[in-house]
Image 1 (cartoon, rainbow, N blue to C red):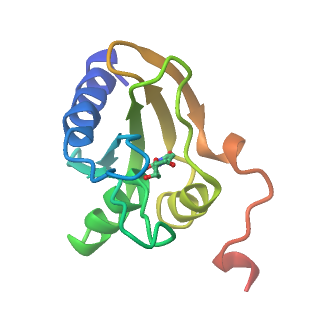
Image 2: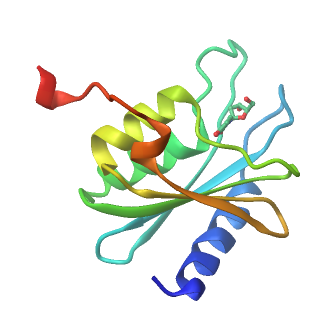
Length: 132
Ligand code: THU
């Protein structure tokens, strides 16, 4: 994986973050998901007045990708405007695992790449369809 590929993905997540609908938390998050064929699908968090129906940037990106017909994924970048990186929440880890498998998870803020993880390391002992 060339560093420029990750840079490009992080840049896409930064741009997607600008579309965040976060009037309640004011915490804007952007995500960019790279498919196996190199397509980049982005997402941002979308909040609403019930609060509880909020969807994170990562799940928006994954659901957009699935609805466009993508089924294989390589990596995702997640961007927030914080010094400490923003890792995916538990619900997003589950969805990313079920549909993306052991993808690379790149965390960044507006100015720097802050770390990379394998999803399997972020979600040990996962529940998925193999156990049904
Ligand atoms: N959020 C995300 O979109 N992704 C994350 O990884 C963490 C949290 C959103 C949900 C909510 O709109 C706001 O950030 C504050 O939790």
